[in-house]
Length: 124
Image (tube, rainbow, N blue to C red; front, side):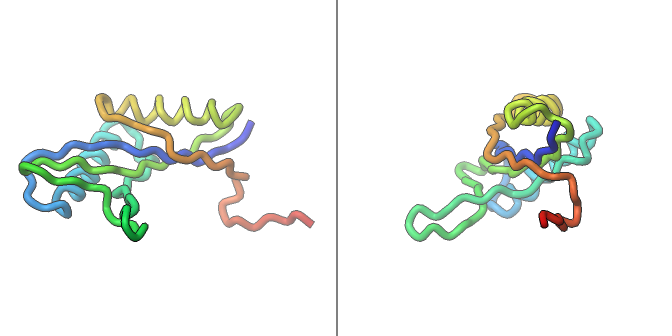
């Protein structure tokens, strides 16, 4: 059994906004509220980033048209005692997906962790 950190991308729709910064704030707030209501405070919610197609520089993942925004969110969750990466993915999607119904989720990264919080490992 291993521990994993699972990162997911979510697509969040925000209506009646005029600026992308406002849309990002509303999306993060609404996602956090829905997660907290279902006792999922341990899920980290951050604005997503995407790369500029021309230069590759990262910028906020938000698109605004007709006072409606589609905001990309990054959700991270630690999964403990999973049998495999695939098992950790299923657990993460089940935990987060249950709280964020009707929100598209996609696994973007799974990292096996050793459970050592300070990162000091003595491999010698």
